[in-house]
Amino acid sequence: MEDSAAVNYGWRTSSYSNGGAATCVEAGHAPGAILIRDTTDSGNGLTLHVTPVAWAQFTARIRANRALS
Image (spheres, rainbow, N blue to C red):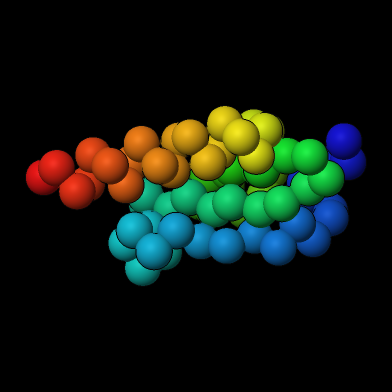
């Protein structure tokens, strides 16, 4: 896969990223993968690559846990 800092993957910042402070997370799309990175690394840090199925399971679990609280 190409360098995620050099290619536009449609990065979106989490709505829970505290307005761009020290707890920023972004997600982007690549063919067959969801990409996750720390916004504060300015695209120079590590990028996690997960399958769309794994991402859907992850976000569903978060939503379910939030509904319980």
